[in-house]
Image 1 (cartoon, rainbow, N blue to C red):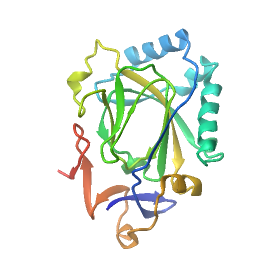
Image 2 (image 1 turned 90 degrees about the vertical axis):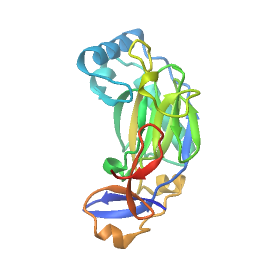
Image 3 (image 1 turned 45 degrees about the horizontal axis):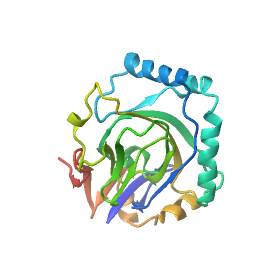
Image 4 (image 1 turned 30 degrees about the horizontal axis):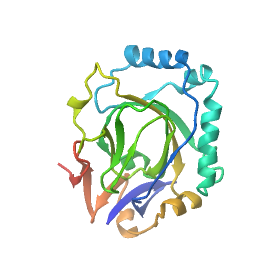
Length: 234
């Protein structure tokens, strides 16, 4: 029993972590050379993007140089509508992110009340997003779209590999992936239905907690960054 304890207003609620991963291949335009060059400068000069890191990029500046941003958002909006998620995208926070691969992790200690909706903007670099617990592995390329539970372990690894290895992401190789991500409220009825999330599954435990966390069979756990398997806290 994998359970997420998340902040709902001023209280902690419990819910099962969904193993459903929704994916699609959307037709979105390639970012312009000017925008790609601006992103490359930002990564090279204003951040240290080590193998496995996932970092935030400046979205407001990108939008000023991104005439096709609206087309990208509309493509995701049309896709989510087709999945039975009307209007949820427009009311959700959006961010621009970058990764050089990604160590296995989950995000439910900070975003337990959300599902992530991601749209990948980069070309195929021979990388997959891997959900080991759900048994899904999805090739990343421009237009790949995903919706998944933030409590679901995931990583970005080389195609053909069995786990995350920092040595596979040498700095001279272009393994950088940029993506837009939206925080969809997990308590939204349409989001909960799409991911088949059951709520208030451990109310007595939730009453005793004051911070978001994930527990497996009642025990606090963490994700092994190399394999994606759950393990007890150190």
